[in-house]
Length: 432
Image 1 (cartoon, rainbow, N blue to C red):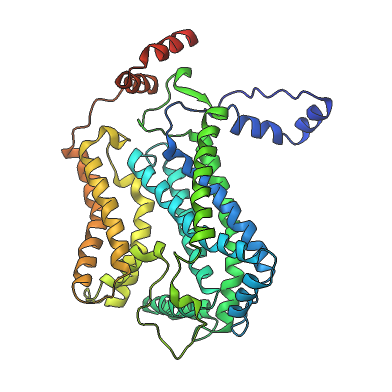
Image 2 (cartoon, rainbow, N blue to C red):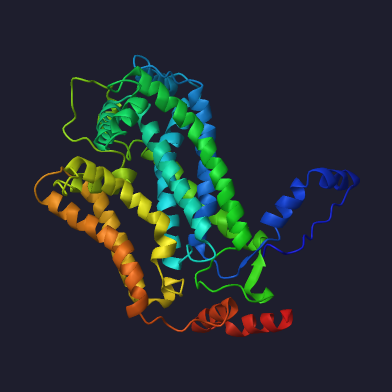
């Protein structure tokens, strides 16, 4: 796909002059209009575009909110309340931004699970996957430091608990903790640092997203069958075929988001975070936002020492290891077949993995005591077993189903099951 010759032809003299010096219209035309995409993409593939839309929404609303926010421990909480009450449409901007963070993670998790299901990380898309993992890591960092800015009870105590865990890292742990805090406790320097990072990192994320899209256009898009494009009949132009699906998916996603903004604006937040931070009053249960709960459950699951590794350090290593293992997925999965549609055992284990991830999220919201600790340890073990045990071994014990000869054949087989193959076959013959 990368070697395809450009078909863009400027229609005016000004257009030709501009194209010879800065061919932005040609880039847009080649990348988002006539760019060939597999003809069998489904709605699960719209979440890449939805993520780009959500990033733009978060940056725009965040920049406006930053104009009215005061990064000072004595003013931060009240400045957020002032935005809600005194700034024109401030309540709308704040609710779009806070709920937008949750919906950003919803889209990100669907995007990751879709990629794992259809094998979008396999060659030649390894670097595309790695860049996506960097995006996810940056998104988590931005969300965590952004959660501190309202300076509510959960903001303060969440920052206290998480930054304290860095002290478990040998040699550099105390230095990292003091660097983040700007001192020895969560205070005004911490808030200033987090505000600066929360403003800067989304623009860095936008740059990595641009690299991610570039890498996608170089290697071409994967598809539900996991089969490479073999002929012109396997692809369609990005516009209107893919753009119609992307716009439809984005509209439905935005409708759900706006429902939460207007009718359930505080549903996804924690009640304790609507009280100003108090260093002398510890909440009964300190929990992060819902999108961090699976990793929080893994952090708390390690309640025992592992040789010279303390339980505190073991929890930190487990939490970061749960993210780090994602970077190695292209090399852990040795199967030659990409899509889970043709991998019966992988498909079953994948859905168990999804259920286990949701279960970990629920455990993260429970107190770290009693049966919940044992369940979190078992679920954490299952999480890592999916990557380091199931993925490498399935190649030797799984017999994949027969793959179609082409994307077009897969589409025709699907149409045959619905009784609409004749028209499709005539269309293929006409194109030939």
